[in-house]
Structures are given as structure tokens and as C-alpha cells.
Length: 69
Image (cartoon, rainbow, N blue to C red; front, side):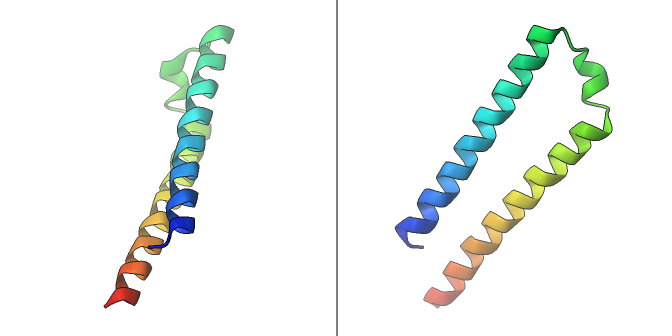
């Protein structure tokens, strides 16, 4: 894996964690009921998008590993 891919993956993970943290902090400041939020469609879509990102990263890692064989 070249340095460009590593940097993109690390940057993506940092942005996801930072965004999720700020989203939850903002919700706490607004007085959200987190039990209802975690059962909502919005949370499910957030999990789906994060899951797709993770699958894409795994695909890149496997593709790079396969090229080295």
C-alpha cells in the first residue's frame, strides 16, 4: 500500500470520528433523547454509510495486497 492510500484511510477515519463526536455533543447540548435517536432511521442510515466506508477501505487493502502477490 502506498502512502497516498494510507493517508486517505487515516484521514477518513479521523473525519468520521470527529464528525460523530461533534454530532453527539451537539445533540447532547440540544437535549436529545439518545435512546430514541439510536432507534431512529437516521441512525440506521449513518451506520449504513459508515459500514460502506469500512467495506471500501477493506476492498482497497485487499486490492493492494493482491497486487503484491
